[in-house]
Length: 319
Image (cartoon, rainbow, N blue to C red; front, side):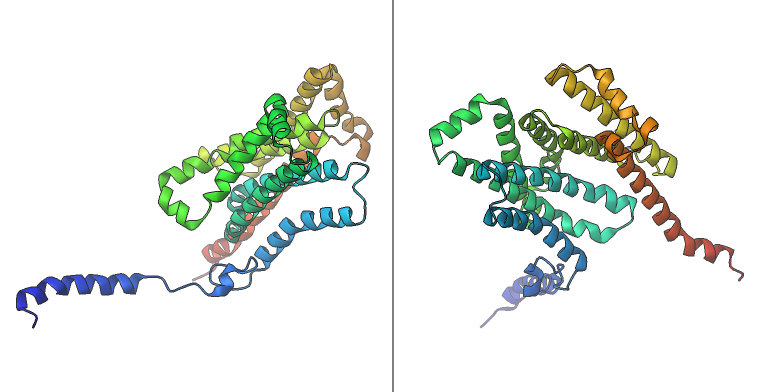
């Protein structure tokens, strides 16, 4: 028989348990685990597109291997392709946050984790293929990573990407709390290291590493824009695009000056040739970076004006 005192003691506990149970979120449907569905289990065309984009490079590499289209050194070519796609997808994942804010596209954030995990997958595949190419000679693999600077920094970047991938789950976000954001802010130095690794292993032709580095600079400009809470107006965004293009040209000139001894003014002159010739041959990485930034500036401006249009019409409409 329960005494009145005991009943009073257990009543609040039972009430608290009932309230906690009522606040508990219902279990997500099994379809929410599908990569093309959102957290509510509903089909998402955006997630499907991101999933196919992340999967496509692997399919293309496997197809090229099946058709013997990877050249005389297929393992080496596969290593390069997986590494290149890891860097491309890394920059794409970094572009999600600024594009979401500039284009007022909230749903875009839903594909960031998927792209980030695909970066980790391609980076791990990059390492796995390297180990296969080295016939799993672990002593040689370790010695090469230690002796060769570009391999050392590449391995450091890989460790960082794996750490970010492992801690990208909802459970780790709750467990790490404020430290989660501090940890994931390391994606920027990790990206810089990965780009340096990309450039060093490219040796002579660094066109794509320079292009990727320029886009990274543009993304850093966007990050500074939001950090300083500046209004993303068309003149400001266009100015950042041109500044990123100039920074890319300077990076290219500096790289060739250090790595090949080419006079920097020759590289800068090559970047300026487009003003004279206006042909596709004279388009340099700096031009593509500037064009990408100008495209984002135009899209953001159109989106902002389109979003403000109904509100403006309501203000001027008669009562």
